[in-house]
Image (cartoon, rainbow, N blue to C red; front, side, top):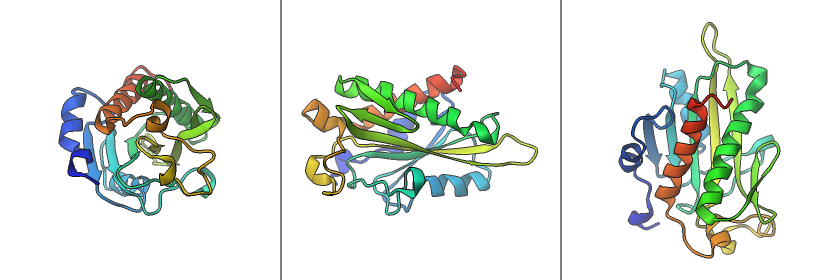
Length: 202
């Protein structure tokens, strides 16, 4: 991966300004799963709004323990920490909020209609471009914590996908027929999520 393509935590943080989601941003070169990193930090008292990106995940996961595949430095892989005042059984509201924010950003980036396939996937032209995984943990006497994992295929080519998923996966770059500025897309996506969250869209 070229250094110029690497996400910069400092630049993303500066670009967001005043916000809830993205108050603290960390970019890792590699980790097992950003959800695991955020959960560990949450257990040590991290504040709501923490966002952890990884340029590569060795054990990324999706719904129903599926593996989330992504070539290093090509997609957006991140997790964020929330402490929403909702019941454990209402976690589907967080999924709805996240997929809506992602779909908005996807449509703006590739100028194509994004379709939400319930409960947690985003599609373009009938192929999957992104997904969400929400994991909640009960916190006695305090709002439950929620870790929201997001994966979006940004600059992958068809060759970056394994043969197993090549026929049903796509990326923003494939849909737009050209590369996407990952940092600009990350900012747009975080702004959308923050706007919807602060507007009470849960």
